[in-house]
Amino acid sequence: MADKKKTNAITAAHLSKTGARGKEIDAIIREQVTIIDDKLQHAPRAWGRNVVLHDLPQTFPIPGLEKIDTQRIVYSALLRNYDSRGFETKIVLDDTTTLCLAWMTDLDTEEVEAMNATIRAMRIPRSNMNAFIKQASSAPRSALAVREGFGAPARPINIRPDDREMPPRGGLQPRHADQASDALASAEKAILDDLGATDG
Image (tube, rainbow, N blue to C red):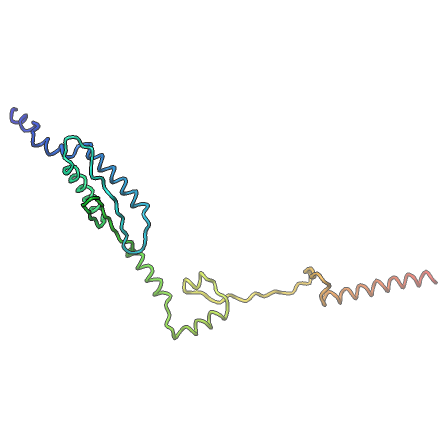
């Protein structure tokens, strides 16, 4: 029983190791990570290599620790944090302490493969370009059908004449003019017959 109590007993060495990462230091590290992450999130991005620089504090309010010790703990924790997340991570130590983070903005493998497949599917040799121009100008095609590879020229639109259609403004068309002339002649004949009957 005494051995068990002795095994679970707190030792000075144990407190010495765990005390180096107290709540105060963890809070400082979390604060710096939050600031740096926000800076990374809002940094302008370009294709290729991107770099963000962040000046770190050189003095931390940790009672009982020397300045060099707090720097060692905080700086090493930040370097490990961003290195583990895939950033190229460096630090400059002189009059100003600067954390340097870099990363590449590039196309991922799936995007590259999809783009290559699109180019391969739609590529033609230059010797076929004239045939493509003539074929494309012969008739309109469905853009979707052509994109899928089985497009065919659209059928011509046939408009059948319809006597019931309303004539355009500006006068009757020839086929309606003939009908109107016959109707006018019939009306004039009926009027003349009525006048003749009255005179008689």
